[in-house]
Image (cartoon, rainbow over all chains, first blue to last red; front, side):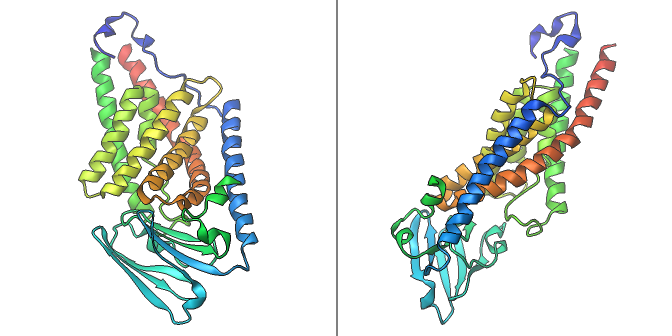
Length: 154
Length: 172
């Protein structure tokens, strides 16, 4: 790269091998990715199935601290939960059927695009506000402050 | 000396390409159009892959970091910058290791890079939100990213070949 470029044969510069044909190593890489993702998705799927009939709780966290955690059954009157922090504001709609992020001061609005959250395991994340809104099932999970640890542990 | 100048030119061109592709991607896929919120194709990775194959590893990292910085300077947000940087550095690390492997083609390099990009971003999200829940995004992000990665490799091949061709003509 630097001064030693004066060598006579200019084609000796060490560049990676040009392998543009689909190769055996690629199959291994794709297989590993698919396998790990399938296990994770399967774990999430079975977790949802197992908790289908449970009471559903809405949990709202900011910076990892729980701001709100309540049984959705208590929201027969829908409400709008407002978060005002130094990072911005958010309005979260909560009813006994669904939860969604109605408004957010963030620029990307990824959290708003996430749409309705209805089943345990659903969630919306707003990174600029550092807010996570998720539906968790009642029972054992409720006592676990970090949420879906059991999904990953499987 | 000639080749050094040529390398600098290629790196600068690829940085420009990365920026144009970042903007193009925002145009092509406005928010909400893809089923996974926050997912991107990573078109800019074309430029980083080209740099990796045609110039070198350090230059590829330079393109990745400078691209993130310029996007931030052009009106991105700091969170977006942190994510593009952690994802970019993770992807670069993986690609550097795999690019030397004989049995891994550009497809494997790009796909593994895209998967690492997703893993890096989830780690950043873990750090930002301090909520383990974000890991449930990982498989979707990695799978979708890997498919995009294969597509990116396909688009990168003709550019690397063209640059090789230009380089050979310059030597003669």
